[in-house]
Length: 392
Ligand SMILES: Cc1ncc(COP(=O)(O)O)c(C=O)c1O
Image: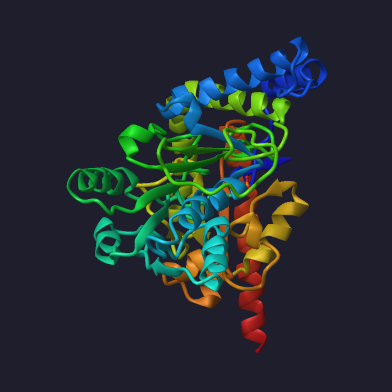
């Protein structure tokens, strides 16, 4: 099997599996209970929190564990805006966000919030200027994805954050700033001070950790109404008995990913270039979507001229090769992806578009094999199209 859908999810690391099974076995006591085994569970969570706090360059009490990226995005948006609803009800986001952000904004719109969905350029990138032009008296939150999950293009998070941070020195009403760093986490700098963000979402299964566990950074002092009420865990911000094993697994995966960030980015960039060069040489009418320099090292989004994405995915699946037609969350939909629409790709071309996403276990041999099979499928498909058109 050649797995090229690492933006949808990654294979868990052996080291992470070992930590999870150890914690499941030995840290079974409820961390809120008043005896020694419970303190062991508490220590495991504290250690994990410390790892994230070091990598994000923040205080440990600014790290909240959640059930994954979707919950982190929901809480990052709903938490502050519901708390600030008497001060303002306007949210700014972009048209190319993940559904975890977009659908959260749509739900808030139904509750009376006003949302600005900023258009992006042809790479899926929003301009800093358009954000600042959209800020109004009643704007309480800006939410912009760090690295786009379909295109890989990077938004100017640091530039937006720096300007908002400067504004805070002179103005009293400056909107909070959230970034969905879920795809960016294994590759980019997550220093929240440098990025100037108030909230950041992370999901462990994007960097060889377990599914169903995420992190939300909430800067101290950020107004926040908890979305999960109950026993008051996670400093009253996210109730529910902590998933100790998965939290420890997430922290281990993050630590390992952080240590190998430059090395992994370099390797995946090389593999990415191998694919792009091959496509340019052999199938020059293929459209490469997304920015080719200002991008994540692992995502390649391609529009082929003569084959539907679904047909190509099925043909590759028969050869045990996994790629996707955009974000996994929209895979079962016949609608062209909203991200592709946001970059101006017409519906016909959008349906010919696939995403290849690389991960730490991919090798050059796998890519060579993938390209060989891809070429065979594309040649077969264009021959078929030609013969069909001749007959007509
Ligand atoms: C950019 C982005 N945001 C949010 C999510 C949702 O994360 P999770 O699958 O952990 O709920 C994903 C997952 O694909 C994503 O890529």
